[in-house]
Image (spheres, one colour):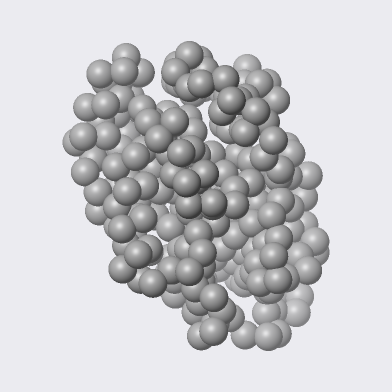
Length: 241
């Protein structure tokens, strides 16, 4: 199977469209989503429609649950809270049920997907360094776990007692190792690269690829401003932070 794993789309339809086009070009057989389809961007409904139209399994992100009302968003930034309030006023009621119904972990025969970490996934802690990786590796019953949440693509590899970062965007899965793959963000990258980020995992070849795709940032920014969302949410898209 050739999987594409997307995360943190955050209502950015232009970025999602560009990634979806490349998935088609790359002959992806199944798309999975690691959460936060909504938040920040101006097209939350359309991005949720994409998941449902193409039957994309998705786990819950903190913004998904916050919009649905299942998670208290009082700890969000002011811009984040403003976006949550705007989304709640601009999506139909039935989408709230969908968002609240998302679970924190998805598994199939090949992979695990969660938004932040497998260790108390409902708290959405940031797995952003090696010291936080062991708690998730311990809970893995598949060789590969895909995450998002930090908006920074990254691969952690465990072999025996050792855990290291991958220094490349492409790794080959080998039986004696486990892999935590942060697929980055489709809709709001934060690694100083404005291109949409996602991952392809080919189970036949064992190859994991972190990929980048350019998209129409200007249109995404214009939509944010036209919606009356905070200007900073538009500005940051071209900065990749």
